[in-house]
Length: 489
Image (tube, rainbow, N blue to C red; front, side, top):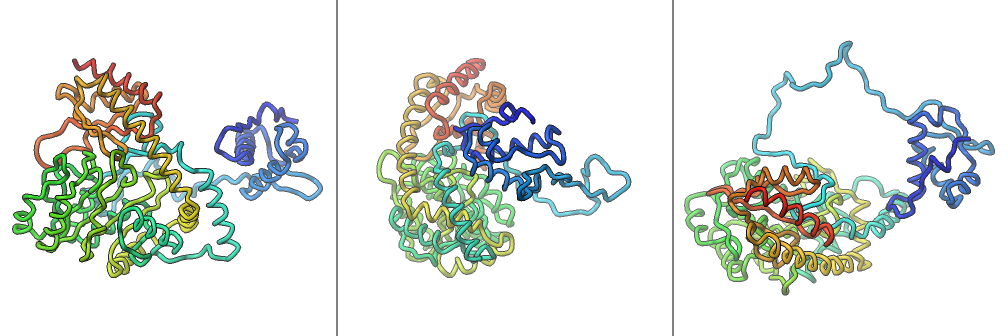
């Protein structure tokens, strides 16, 4: 018998279930040739003794391996490694295969205005403003997901569903937005999306066609800008100051161009983190009526406002149905869970779902209903409250450290909310070079390219996310940042 006690190492502190840890390691033994075809695995009783696990865990692991095609379980005989492993073989279409097809002979259309997003690596550091996924209620969500999957399977409801999203989640989202943001909506005003990026796409598609104009801040969310360009629209910019986007030039822009919409992040403007003042909110809605344009309101991290009660979103004071309001659970739970929402008039929702239908038939129904369960039970609310306290402490700690150690090199204002600090670096500091040097030392720091203004002089600034790091990690990163910055002085 193989030395299973040495080969199989169970980590009881891991988030991976014990039966999956065991299954994965047995698969590795098969792939490495240590368990060959026809090999008999230990009985569940013996392996349970070896690994100090419950026999039910062993049986569950064996059932998992059999369902994946790695073993056969024979009644009264035991579990055996299969003769043909479940490898996928690539079909050969030609006698001579090239190493890689780089160029097609057919002239496909390209997407000159779009850029591929970069995957977020595992480096710690100052991201764009992400949540700490270690705080996420993963165990609760996993249990809710499994309950939902079993229930829907039992009821034979794992088929196509409403492209608008499941009713339980629409109800919970409408309740949340009415209670926390002052909206006056029902389920009929909500479309569940795969994150806020899909919501932005749908909102832009509903408002911009070739030749139309979208007003944005001089600094603005690049993804939204790309979508406008992709649909053939043009961008016109207005300055951004400590009270949000400036509105004085909007009448002149509207008189000269076919303005259809304005894009705003009214809470914690991206990238500068400033909040649109109450006075400007009222003025903006008046301008929307006077010049007949709509407002695309990105509500990406409304829940994290630390210093006082946040100003209500524009959608809360919208009697004419001009505001398309959208957000997601990305900042609240984790970026991997692509669940968001779009809020608009019932008429627009019924129209916009037709577009969603042709490129994404529906969302992840099981995940969406599981999140609705967590909302109904108050788990999301409690998680938000806990996260709010932790992120506020981290914001204060990060700002204090930056002030003490780097005030000669960086200028910033403590943000009233959100998960990032907008930092302007001394002109002598080359951010792309600094970013590369930080990466070599295992710390992420943006190179600043994605935050450059659409018009006007370049800005030597970046967003410095603080929420995803604990205090020890933050201190470590700022120490390294100080050491690297000193190379420029």
